[in-house]
Amino acid sequence: MFGRKKQTTSRIETLIAAGTRIEGNLFVSGGVHLEGTVVGNVTAAAGVAAVLSIAPRGCVEGCVEVPRVIVHGEVRGDIRARDKVELGPTAKVSGDVSYGVIEMAAGAVIQGRLVSSAGTPPADG
Image 1: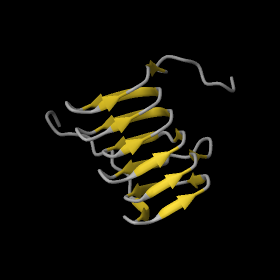
Image 2: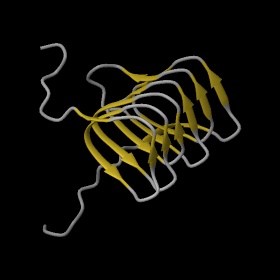
Image 3: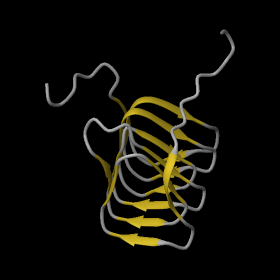
Protein backbone atom coordinates (compact mmCIF):
# COMPACT_ATOMS: atom_id res chain seq x y z
CA MET A 1 0.00 0.00 0.00
CA PHE A 2 1.34 3.47 0.82
CA GLY A 3 4.98 3.88 1.73
CA ARG A 4 6.06 0.65 0.03
CA LYS A 5 8.59 1.05 -2.71
CA LYS A 6 7.82 -0.74 -5.95
CA GLN A 7 10.54 -3.24 -6.74
CA THR A 8 12.14 -2.22 -10.02
CA THR A 9 15.32 -4.26 -10.00
CA SER A 10 15.54 -6.85 -12.66
CA ARG A 11 17.25 -10.19 -12.34
CA ILE A 12 20.96 -10.18 -13.17
CA GLU A 13 21.59 -12.85 -15.80
CA THR A 14 25.15 -11.94 -16.80
CA LEU A 15 28.13 -10.99 -14.65
CA ILE A 16 31.28 -9.49 -16.11
CA ALA A 17 33.74 -9.92 -13.27
CA ALA A 18 36.41 -7.55 -12.01
CA GLY A 19 39.63 -7.96 -13.97
CA THR A 20 37.74 -8.90 -17.14
CA ARG A 21 38.23 -6.63 -20.17
CA ILE A 22 35.98 -6.90 -23.21
CA GLU A 23 37.17 -5.16 -26.37
CA GLY A 24 34.26 -4.81 -28.80
CA ASN A 25 30.58 -4.00 -28.69
CA LEU A 26 28.38 -5.74 -26.14
CA PHE A 27 24.74 -6.52 -27.00
CA VAL A 28 22.53 -7.17 -23.96
CA SER A 29 19.05 -8.64 -23.66
CA GLY A 30 18.55 -8.97 -19.90
CA GLY A 31 20.19 -7.94 -16.67
CA VAL A 32 23.96 -7.37 -16.85
CA HIS A 33 26.21 -6.49 -13.90
CA LEU A 34 29.58 -5.06 -14.93
CA GLU A 35 32.52 -5.13 -12.53
CA GLY A 36 35.17 -5.20 -15.28
CA THR A 37 35.75 -3.01 -18.35
CA VAL A 38 34.04 -2.84 -21.72
CA VAL A 39 35.92 -0.98 -24.46
CA GLY A 40 33.11 -0.55 -26.97
CA ASN A 41 29.42 0.30 -27.05
CA VAL A 42 26.82 -1.45 -24.89
CA THR A 43 23.46 -1.76 -26.66
CA ALA A 44 20.12 -3.47 -26.07
CA ALA A 45 17.79 -4.49 -28.89
CA ALA A 46 14.66 -2.39 -29.38
CA GLY A 47 11.76 -3.48 -27.21
CA VAL A 48 13.93 -5.46 -24.77
CA ALA A 49 13.66 -4.63 -21.04
CA ALA A 50 17.41 -4.76 -20.40
CA VAL A 51 19.28 -3.36 -17.40
CA LEU A 52 22.99 -2.49 -17.19
CA SER A 53 24.43 -2.13 -13.69
CA ILE A 54 27.98 -0.78 -13.45
CA ALA A 55 29.79 -1.49 -10.17
CA PRO A 56 32.08 1.11 -8.52
CA ARG A 57 35.17 -0.33 -10.26
CA GLY A 58 33.32 -1.09 -13.51
CA CYS A 59 33.92 1.01 -16.62
CA VAL A 60 32.43 1.41 -20.10
CA GLU A 61 34.57 3.21 -22.67
CA GLY A 62 31.89 3.79 -25.30
CA CYS A 63 28.24 4.71 -25.66
CA VAL A 64 25.55 2.97 -23.62
CA GLU A 65 22.08 2.53 -25.13
CA VAL A 66 20.09 0.39 -22.69
CA PRO A 67 16.56 1.11 -21.34
CA ARG A 68 17.70 1.18 -17.70
CA VAL A 69 21.22 2.07 -16.58
CA ILE A 70 22.57 2.03 -13.01
CA VAL A 71 26.02 3.60 -12.63
CA HIS A 72 28.27 3.40 -9.60
CA GLY A 73 31.44 3.26 -11.69
CA GLU A 74 32.49 5.11 -14.83
CA VAL A 75 31.11 5.69 -18.34
CA ARG A 76 33.32 7.43 -20.91
CA GLY A 77 30.71 8.09 -23.56
CA ASP A 78 27.05 9.04 -23.94
CA ILE A 79 24.25 7.27 -22.08
CA ARG A 80 20.84 6.89 -23.76
CA ALA A 81 18.29 5.26 -21.45
CA ARG A 82 14.67 5.56 -22.51
CA ASP A 83 13.41 4.41 -19.09
CA LYS A 84 15.68 5.35 -16.21
CA VAL A 85 19.23 6.33 -15.28
CA GLU A 86 20.39 5.91 -11.68
CA LEU A 87 23.69 7.54 -10.73
CA GLY A 88 25.18 6.49 -7.41
CA PRO A 89 27.51 8.63 -5.28
CA THR A 90 30.64 7.22 -6.99
CA ALA A 91 29.33 7.54 -10.58
CA LYS A 92 31.44 9.37 -13.16
CA VAL A 93 30.05 10.07 -16.63
CA SER A 94 32.06 11.81 -19.35
CA GLY A 95 29.37 12.34 -21.97
CA ASP A 96 25.77 13.36 -22.48
CA VAL A 97 23.02 11.58 -20.55
CA SER A 98 19.62 11.16 -22.23
CA TYR A 99 16.96 9.74 -19.91
CA GLY A 100 13.27 9.17 -19.32
CA VAL A 101 13.70 9.48 -15.54
CA ILE A 102 16.91 10.25 -13.69
CA GLU A 103 17.92 9.64 -10.08
CA MET A 104 21.24 11.09 -8.97
CA ALA A 105 22.97 10.79 -5.60
CA ALA A 106 25.16 13.51 -4.11
CA GLY A 107 28.72 12.98 -5.29
CA ALA A 108 27.86 11.76 -8.81
CA VAL A 109 29.82 13.59 -11.53
CA ILE A 110 28.61 14.30 -15.07
CA GLN A 111 30.84 16.03 -17.60
CA GLY A 112 28.27 16.53 -20.33
CA ARG A 113 24.65 17.51 -20.86
CA LEU A 114 21.52 16.11 -19.26
CA VAL A 115 18.78 15.66 -21.86
CA SER A 116 15.29 14.60 -20.81
CA SER A 117 13.54 12.39 -23.32
CA ALA A 118 10.32 12.27 -21.25
CA GLY A 119 7.36 13.22 -23.39
CA THR A 120 9.34 12.77 -26.61
CA PRO A 121 7.59 10.59 -29.18
CA PRO A 122 9.41 7.37 -30.10
CA ALA A 123 11.89 7.69 -32.97
CA ASP A 124 10.08 5.14 -35.13
CA GLY A 125 6.70 6.69 -35.04
